[in-house]
Amino acid sequence: VQLQASGGGLVQAGGSLRLSCAASGRTFSGYAVAWFRQGPGKEREFVATISGSGIRTYFADSVKGRSTISRDNSKTTVYLQMNSLKPEDTAVYYCAVDTRPAHSHALVTVSDAMDYWGKGTQVTVSS
Image 1 (cartoon, rainbow, N blue to C red):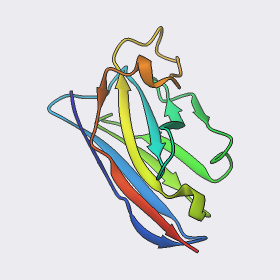
Image 2: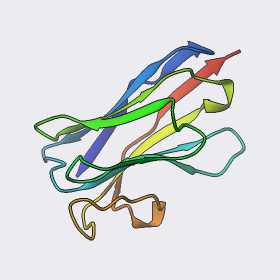
Image 3: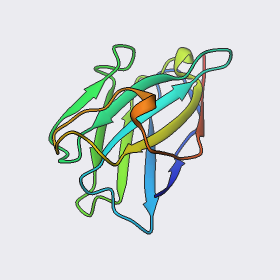
Image 4: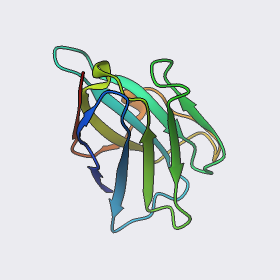
C-alpha cells in the first residue's frame, strides 16, 4: 500500500486545515488508519485514528475537541480535519495503516503496529 499525505501548509493560529491520506492502487477498506505527527525537536506522537469500519474514532488529548477524522465511502482516502489550530500543532503529519487490525472496529494508536507509512505533510501554525 502506498500512502500519500497532503493538505498541510502555513496557517495562522485559530485557523483550520484538512489533511488527506490517499492510498494508491488499493483501498483502505477494513484497515485501521492513524495520523501521527512529529514536531521540531520532539518525538513522533499519535494524533488520531479511525477503525476499518469507520464507526469508531479516537483522538489524542492534545487535539480532542478540535479535530475530526473520517473516511470516504470508497475508502480510498482518510481525512483529518483540524480546527482552532495552535502553534504547538506545528509538525510533520504522517498517516499510517494497520492492515491487520484485530477486528473491523479496532482502533490503533501505536506506531509499531502500523504496516505502511506515507511521507509526511508539513503543518505550520503561526502565532
